[in-house]
Amino acid sequence: MLKEPGDFAEWRSAARGLLVGGVAPDAVSWRDSEAGASLFGEEAVEASAGAVSLPRELLGIAERVICHRDAEVPARLYRIIWRAARDRQLLARTTDPDVDWLMKADKTIRRDVHKMHAFVRFRRLGEDDAGRESFAAWFEPDHRILRITAPFFQRRFYGMDWAIVTPDTRAIWQAENLSYGPGGTKSDVPDSDVVEDQWRTYYGAIFNPARVKIEAMRAEMPKKYWKNLPEAQDIAPLLAGAEARVERMRETAVSLANPLTDKWRTRVQDELLLDDDVKTLGDVARAVDHCTRCPIHCNATQAVAGEGPQSARIMFVGEQPGDQEDLQGRPFVGPAGQVLNEALEEAGIDRTRLFLTNAVKHFKFEPRGKRRLHQNPTTGEIDICRWWLDKERAFVQPELIVTLGGSALRGVTGKSASIASMRGRVHDLAGGGKLLATIHPSFLLRLPDRDRAAEERKAFVADLIRVRELAA
Ligand code: URA
Image (tube, rainbow, N blue to C red; front, side, top):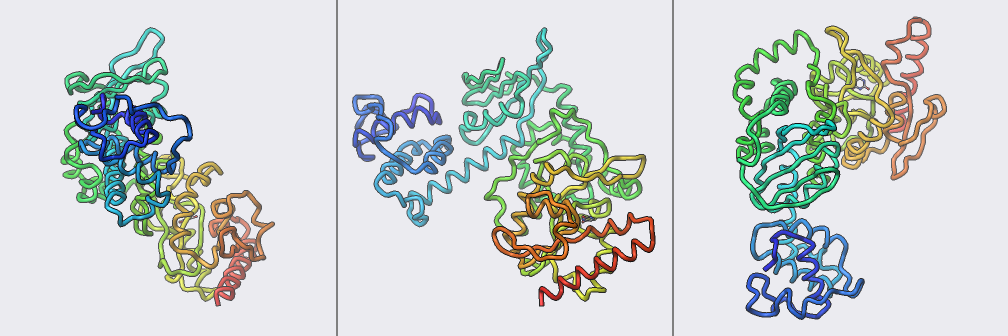
């Protein structure tokens, strides 16, 4: 039996000794140290480095799966590494019962981790003489995942002291040192505090009544977590007042500023987005709305994913949603979209056959009274958001990408180049497909001189005609 179930270092050291000692899985009892070879007996010699080599991926999976509560896990994992040491392709044999079990168990743990990242809520305990604040949180994960999740909280809340108490163990981050102690109970953590009120205000502010999808909410925030989530008690009243809020939103069309301090509001749930959560183009549209990889998401109403058939041969990439796109959740439906529609029509291109998207998926703006003034995304924000654009490109696989403006060009190529230097020629894209760069339609809206505007518009339509010809 492992001294601390779920402790990967302990299991690995024991398993490594057994493996190097050539002890077959059937000869080991991981549950009962009386029977079979003892884990901590003579056979458990420390392995010399490199004596047995295993696929690195397998060790990563084992580190997660050892957290599973199923008492058979240490033994099953040992059997798998025993087999993998003799069969390097084992993990690729997805119909193998051991591999199938391993992948399912890994998925279960990753889901549990994902929920813990999202649903831990800290309560403030106080601050020391130097002004360093301390916090505590109570959390009941399904599995023993505290050791693999603690580094995430360490990175995120590096500048304060905190403890996370679970029934099995507790993690303590104090004076920049991470340690573990015994598990506890809910009563070890104070009931409510000012941070809790901030969470509730935050949730109230980001709650978007126009987009309420109760089933999706339940799937993402399972009821089991509600009792420990301060904001959960507000869900019913918020839903009840939803209609009135939609009306108010329509009237003012201004997003509320987020009341949380920067420390809390940025990157609240970025790690919700696991790579393998996004398996289809539809997943992109659903998942991008949870994206908190950069701060733009804080004030936007929603993320705006690309739109159009997956089979589209041409993809148009703009900069970011504008005010109307942000409210309607669709790209190019505001004034710039109007200019684009007219130019497309003039060039003989059917918009419904295009895939239209943006380099950045949230609306970045500055509130000015009741208006929201567009702000350009930084290159850093464009580069962060490329993760989504790349996913869309991978699913659509367009033969031609048309970039509208400099931000789109950066989003697609990863390089900052002037439109003038790229326009008028067709470029090969790394990874396949062609690129044609042109101006952003909003540029035409900003030109004060009518003659110049007419001239630029003509050139824009000429670029689109080239697009049509290329597609033909
Ligand atoms: N401008 C863009 O770049 N994209 C939109 O979707 C709308 C305006």
